[in-house]
Image (cartoon, rainbow, N blue to C red; front, side, top):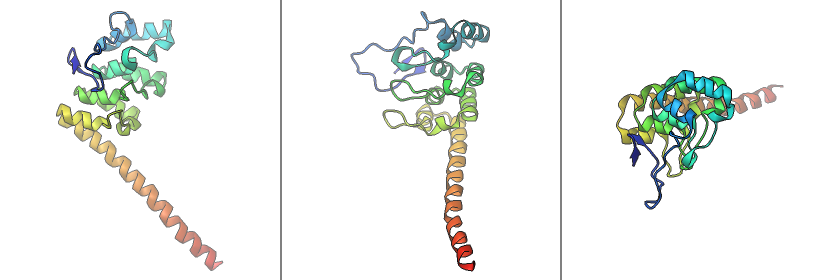
Length: 177
């Protein structure tokens, strides 16, 4: 389903109203959706909790900014605190899920650089951001996600090899002594 071209999660019961995201009643969400950095800074100064406030369906300003491709807003949020980006909504989806699903290449880039752990988070229905990108058929996003996932796998394998190689060398040293 969607709202103004923005992909939402598949967990909505058919009888329930689709989310409004409170864009009309929550100025910070509207500012983030439009990439209005002056308003984002002013509103954050007036009410710092507005960056982490939960909207309909558990969305946050980060979900809105990512869905709409507002990379400057995401960079600002990261400068305030990385935890503002590390959020899941009621469907278990993080901002990277939505940036990937909506083909928001610049938002994906920012999120992968500033919070790469978002790339391996799984939502309630088992999908990762890369799965969302596949359904959106955005090749450049798939390449970016593949690079990050490959790096994480290689780092994990390297750590495992280091653990495995440590024990034999330690035992050899013990036997020599």
